[in-house]
Amino acid sequence: MSVRVRIAPSPTGDPHVGTAYVALFNAALARQRGGQFVLRIEATDRGRYVANSEQQIFDTLHWLGLDWDEGPDKGGPRGPYRQSERLPLYQAAARQLVELGYAYYCWCTPERLEEMRAEQMRNKRPPGYDRQCLGLTRDERARLPGFDDSPVIRMRVPDRDVPLTFDDMIRGPTNAPMPDDQVILKKDGYPTYHLAVVVDDHEMGITHVLRAEEWISSMPKQLLLYQFFGWQPPAFAHLPLLRNPDRSKISKRKNPAARLLWFQEEGFLPEALVNFLALQGWSMSDGREIFSFDDVVANFDVERFSLVGPIFDVDKLDWMNGEYIQRLSDAEFLDRAQAFLPGPGQESALRLLAPHLKTRVKRLKEVCDQVEFLYQGKLDLERDLLHKQGSAGGSPSALDALLAAEAALDHVAADGFSESAVEAALHAEQAKREWKPRPFLMPIRVAISGKTQTPPLFPMLAALGRERTLVRLRDAIALLSEPD
Ligand code: GLU
Image (cartoon, rainbow, N blue to C red; front, side, top):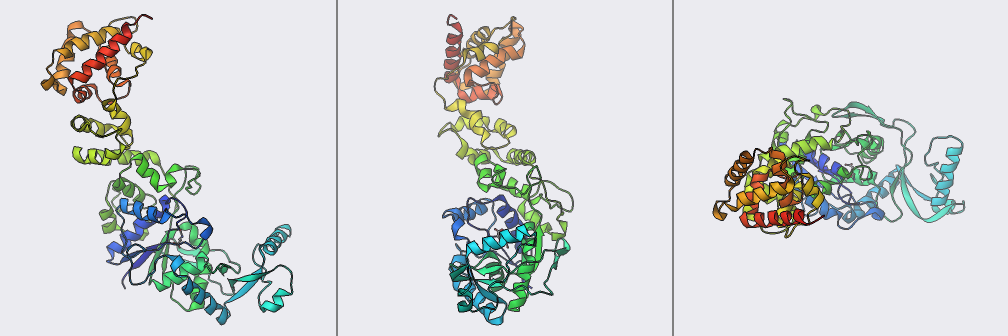
């Protein structure tokens, strides 16, 4: 049997990290089995629809290298792939269930449903629709209070033999709660999620549904719908939920990492994020931590999911991203870092710094701060900060250090102003004066960058070049020489 899997993200805002997580394993299963991976846009909730969200879903998944075979942007034999373009299908399906006696019209107003719920709460009765409309014609119902002219359609949950247990590919036999008579078609002619997902998975020939754990409770409703229609359900695997450090479901409100765009904004490499996501509740049989999407494809097995919801550990992701960054060639690194640079130009300086930056940054965003000194004109130095870098009470003072550095570097020719030449010149000066390295070198670092945390000093000087280095040293000397 050929495998067909899908993801069905809702375009309700910028994409959630869970969409990438679920997409990753669906894509891996499809690739491994030579099947198809379908992207379906699930927009049944018009109130929550966000116009550019669909494009962001496409873009972020492409950024991660997770591509689909059929979808709204690609077409395919089982389209259309946007639920908003499939309304007649759901409407026909809902009417068919009414005709078969598996569903019924409900004309209750929102106010009546609200009162019913309040009453159930007061009497500590289980919540659920009280079947006021079941078995009534429109005219019969219209004579009762709380009547709304445009009806919804509800599925009729049988009193017995509801499938409350199902066989999950990861969890084995799994229980879910008894549903009430769910709305399947809304007043506006849109389906609810439960009807749409069943109709679409069936119509699109989906064989395996890999989705988040939070949908387990929907299984009885969805399995009932499959029974009503007389369709064979796909196999189901409910993946563990990604969790915040407090173990709650990862959410945009509590955790910036819930937003997929956040990883782009911070400068995580897509291949590092894919690797990290693959380790959330899943693992390689050999316990390897660094691996590619192709490795997931080669080794994917649903049995290797753990049932404990993984805590989304951004520190670990930082470590992993650092590992991936270090493995890039210098040219590749600079190419990836391009979007995070303070401005254009400085190519040769950046090439000199690249090997040092690669080992220092965990996120590409940090590159900006590290190379800012290359893009600045005259620095706005803090006199106190500069002063503090010299030896307190001893030798050299910051001013002595800068005077000595300026004289030493003035002797290095502009075309030989290399990392090793400046290092040799400064070391000779330091040795001659018998100074400790720190009070000698730190004032230089601050004088050329305005910062105490920077890449290593000698490549920075070489990257800045002779002329700009001397100007900055002289500016700093002038600042320290001003009367208090
Ligand atoms: N729209 C649902 C989601 O975004 C799809 C759930 C499912 O895969 O059935 O999670």
